[in-house]
Length: 198
Image (cartoon, rainbow, N blue to C red; front, side, top):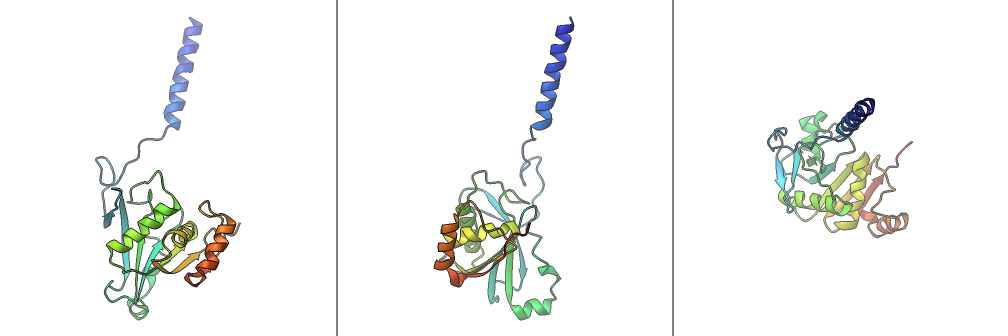
């Protein structure tokens, strides 16, 4: 009798541990039971949705069209205080900045097979959807700086200038040798590369 009780308790403990460590299924924006959609989104070629937010002057009058890539544990709303700029300064600078939720963040659908190439192509598709033209600027902050390397490698023909602020430089998409090659090959496109501080 004692063995059966111990076995039942052990079985119950195993079930409880499994349930406690197994995450619930994701709640994707716009699906039944998921959070509501509050941002404009584009539907990408592969069927995923990418949420974005626009700042600055209108696209038609902008001198500079910039796509901003947020860092880890961030989203499209975190754009390094662009919202704090006065309308006069924004008008004088003449920029149109688009920030977007990277795949799996905010209201953008997850992309389990995400690669540096896939996110660079997502940026290219976002720029096409917003009619940014054949050339635009890309700026990445912190972990968003990784994306800059993907843009440099996979869509250099589309980016006028790439800026990584406080971004990591030793990422999986590029070995140190190939990163150096990319920097030399596309040096006119890279404005600033900040290193991660410990």
